[in-house]
Image (cartoon, rainbow, N blue to C red; front, side, top):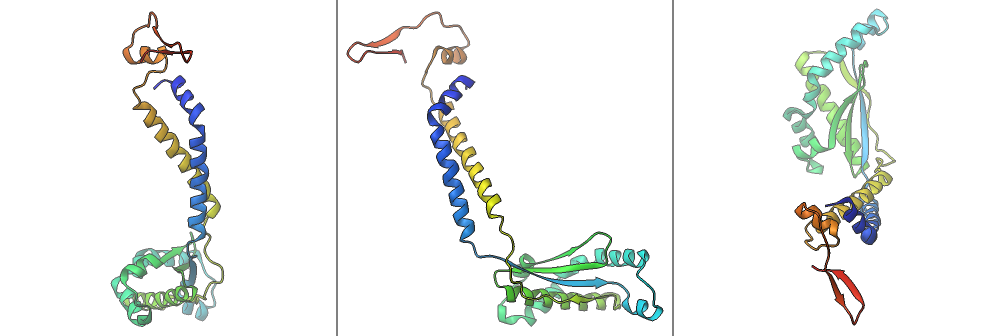
Length: 231
């Protein structure tokens, strides 16, 4: 399709793109606004030899942080092990949780060059999110201590029921929806015009058959005074 023909389509069908732009944005805004908010509860844990530091009266050194990081990297997958999840499911039987639920709800996060890490739980019920996060942290701590026979892993701060929900990025997603609507409308117009066999100008004939048009025989309607190129 030639640029000239595409510009002609946009000239007469611009309102379709504009309408789709605003309708898609309004739809995205409404959908996001009516979604139930999610709440994120967070447990803070440490990975360090607390007893040695207390007995020797030493401060935390880089070696301790590096060792803690190695322990954490080796056992980060333990949080979603069957042993941990089974313990949580049995402890929180009132919520009728499944392994799939826990996989979707919980995650483990850590910061670079730190011996502090976090177990997060996200749910539409803030109380449930906090309970699950604390239970996961407790089970994770117990399993780690059992595996390596150490007290180096423990809970620093338990999770509390969050008051504010997670950010839903309503504005950003609305703008994304508007752009997606405009792109889909433009694509639909382009495909429809590309598949349209109608000839609108001499240029269309030249582009289609790759030869120069020597002349045009008009189709003349005397009654209506209409002159058009023969189809």
